[in-house]
Length: 82
Image (cartoon, rainbow, N blue to C red; front, side, top):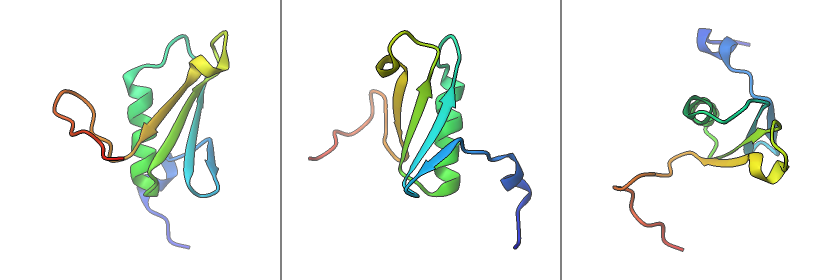
């Protein structure tokens, strides 16, 4: 099996059904670098959906952040069609 130098640094916490990348944290607060890390994992694995889960919260629902590969954010983002 051939490996690339960059593949050694990539360690996804979980990949569910080969569709969703899950990154688990236990930090005081989720920082922008955590979302960028998960987005990089999504790019490398060619996946669209990721979940960033922080277990250092009172309610677990408050610690879950959904990250989508290819979704534009910010004031210039186009509205998504349903």
